Length: 345
Image (cartoon, rainbow, N blue to C red; front, side, top):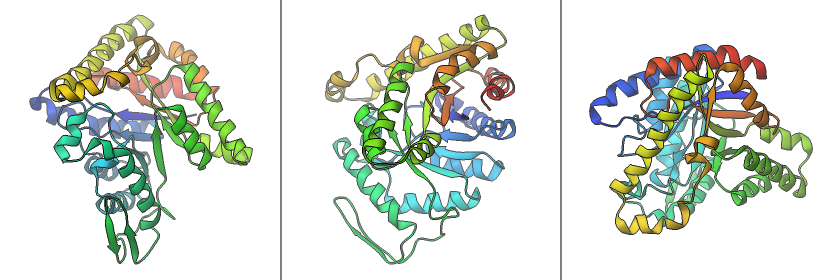
């Protein structure tokens, strides 16, 4: 099982932005030295939930200051991007990193309507925009004199420069939050990114993925290849003892989820808040029981066995939760790399 770090750094007030962004770059560099497979970047705007805001720009900084670690988006909100500008930026990062970029895509947040308003995009168009951009990306890196006429974009492109480093193009992987989207990825022979679910739901969806691929006549070798390139997300805090990890992790996790929820109340309109009623049921993502793994290296290793047994290829791990200090995060990362990762390699 591969392990990676999800850089999703909170900055509650503008005066903290510089320090948090600088420490996030240090965190990526540390993960490179410690042997993590990938560092994943989020995209959220206007509220301090993700301090560096723009994964494209930040990926360039990481590419130029690391050597081996892959850089992925988890995810780029495609409804907020022009497809050709996005394709150019990915191509440049792919060259700067010598082929270390993984393009994780999603339609955009289901909760932060103010992000769409800030970019002048209708959130009801987000799913269709994602599908159209995916169609464009699948061709624009490999086709000269590319033309496209769609719902949102009309494109007449002589050639994309620079060309991508990875051939035929960097891997493109979509975020999946529900069972139907997992089935869609399986039916179309694509790996996936899965957000936080209970271990039981995670195992069920991976089994559903296998079953759907088999029903579409894919071979077991292709199924396992795709699963090795798929990822599930967890929040993890490691400390020397279970007690210390729990004291650090639970408080920071609860405050982080509270901050993100309060932002939605603060910045969404009343009409937008009302429209969320149907999608704001209790989620594993918000639950200490299911959304957080804490403990000593031995305890965390034991808790990860159930995930490893699903056959998933990689874990996206959010280590720096909320206002957690850089020093505490650094210790957690070191303990995980030195005393947890070897148990799964």
